[in-house]
Image 1: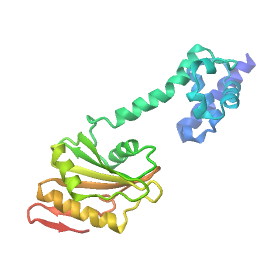
Image 2 (image 1 turned 90 degrees about the vertical axis):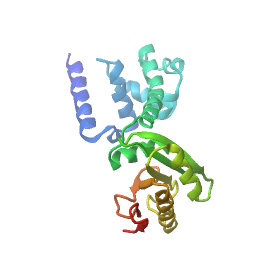
Image 3 (image 1 turned 60 degrees about the horizontal axis):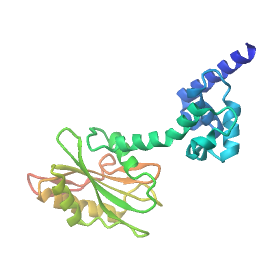
Length: 239
């Protein structure tokens, strides 16, 4: 009974830690121990987590193991093995849902999150144009061009063509700097001005241009560095 109460207290402390500081605050064996709570209501999962890490190498390798392999570790039953094996599929499904073309995106943070999911694991430079309808729902997300080791060239013709094909009057431009900083270069800024003007000539509004890395994003609009096309006068204004 005393052992059971001790484990209960430990679980509560772990839950409070995750609630206050997030799952990222845990070491890999602790995160796995926490996940194992889902199928082990009473059992101490600390030892099982350590055994799984020792057997497969790290947290990711545990989730990538087959159900049969997972069941060879003492304390892991079929239900736990199925749950662990399913987690990567759940993550992929979640990421796909986050980038659904039916999502409503009303804030910079929501757009940044949407684009980070789209560009996840890209180790080369790419560019995308996102078309939004009047309710800020994504109508289309089109890859404009994919680079190799060189920087992506934001070609005006391809951007305008993709914008027109998107069938809306509002678009967001985005490209990534996989090995650099989430900041626009002078070339990026100049290209953005040319694109904003070209889009304006066909009555399409460039709402923002995002620069992404693996871990962060930069909104030219929020940083007051986005050139704005005035449809009334046909003039491009620089902040």
